[in-house]
Image: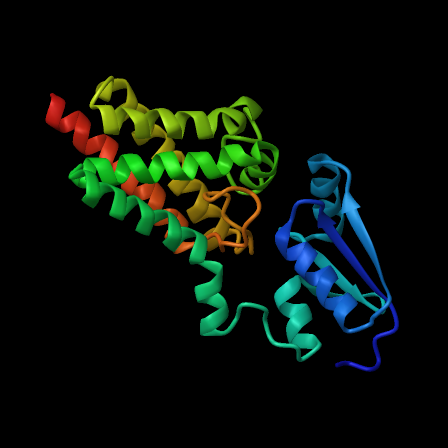
Length: 238
């Protein structure tokens, strides 16, 4: 640990998983710190403009900004939580559990690919609905539409559930295919921007807001598959 550190400050959104990790890491190293949580998204954006940064959390050690959780862990020589292969596998366990369960259900029922996708979407929607507010808070951190149209974030799990049920029941396929296509394109674009353009370290809200599943390739693939499935259904019905 860096023994020269006397005081630290963490500026983060209350629901930001990486901000919480940074605060927990400082606490585990017995470093005195002030935990500044933003009261609103507007306050967070004002902080970013003032400090000339594009992401939060931001950690300051003895008055000097060092960056986010990754930079903090490197500075303290603590290693990244979940940075090992074992940690990465642990982070993805909720995703593996959902899709493995959906696959077994599809095989047991003989529902095929449509059934697998239907079961997967219904399970994912169920996890989101278990704590809808936590999902919305996490979703708004990276989705492009949700901050502009808050209703979209709140209705997203219901849209996902509706698409899943439509696939399982082979009903209202045309409107549900359009929903899947639009939602998948918006979601995939949002993830590409957040992860690969803005370089944000965020958790994916795909399995709800209470899991530390990293936002990235898996999340993008989920949205790409949804968009592709919607497009394939529309082409087949034409």
